[in-house]
Image (tube, rainbow, N blue to C red; front, side):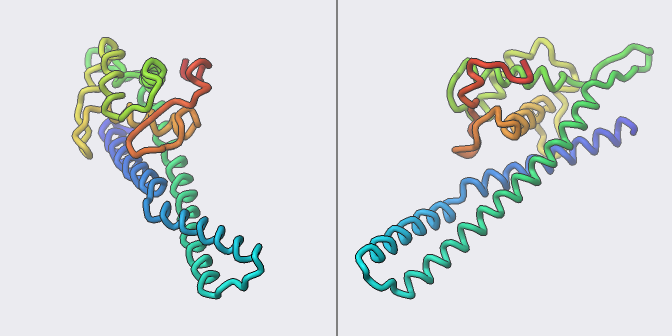
Amino acid sequence: MTKNVLSEVEQLLEQLSSHVDELVEAALSSPIDSESDIQLREISKAIERLESSGVSIPSALLEEKSRLLNIVSSHRGYQDQAITIHNKLNALVLRLRDVTTSRIRGNIDGNSTQDTTPWRVVAKAVIDTLRQQRRQMRRTEIWEAVYIIIQDRMLPCDFEPAQHNGRPFWKNTVSRVLYNLRKENILRPAIQHGYHELEEVYYENQTPFD
């Protein structure tokens, strides 16, 4: 695979990975589904109270419960599908990144140079950042903190802009690391869109990237 073709594949996978991640986060934080879930619980409680008092359950109430149950169940099924697609795609992106970051390519003079900062180095910096802060952090905050940690080890290609979003390559690597850490349950599930936080156990215990 030539360098140009490999670069195009990387860019397409990064763009697709970002798009799928946005869909997953949107699915997990849908206010419509949250409202339906609350309504379903309230109706279920009302039905239980009526049943316990021996009152006949109105058909309209049962129909509304069925309608809300279908909405909630359908949405949860969509969440599961989206997360499965995200995880499979992310695994593919990471395999490609492991290959490209570990490959040593010879330059014109016959010397060897590595294209970008190794993925595991970036992952270690992300985890160290979250450990130090011990709080939820926005992706932009993590970018700034990680840059301070790894700037002395960054390589020229880290600063090249990606065609699909114009960000320096190292920022896209940090974003992809965050996706993978969540998939590996090292980060907590997304509670608020765009925020990231370590699982409590990893504040004191090692991760595979230490």
